Picture 1 (cartoon, rainbow, N blue to C red):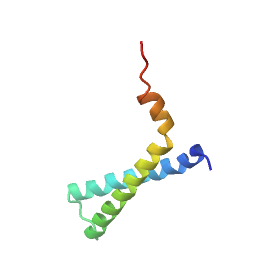
Picture 2: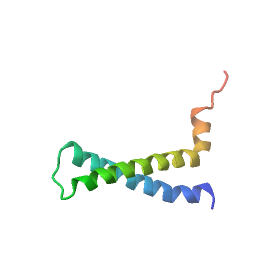
Picture 3: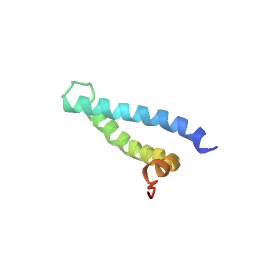
Picture 4: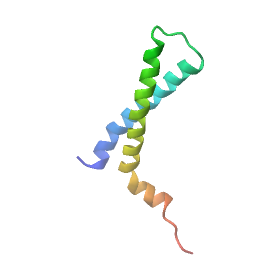
Length: 76
C-alpha cells in the first residue's frame, strides 16, 4: 500500500479523533451532565494518546510535502 492510499483512512480517523477530543473536552469544561462522567474522562485520555499517534503518522505520510514547502530555503 502506498502512502497516498494509507493517508486517506488515516485522515478520516484523525478527523474523527479530533472531533472526539473536542466533544469530550467541551463536556468536561462546561460540566455538561452525562450519565457516566468517568467514562468521558477515560475516552478523552485514551483518545488523546491515539490522536498523538495519528498526528505523527499524518506528518510521516506527508513528510515529502513538509520538506518541500517548509524546509526549501532557496538562495537568492
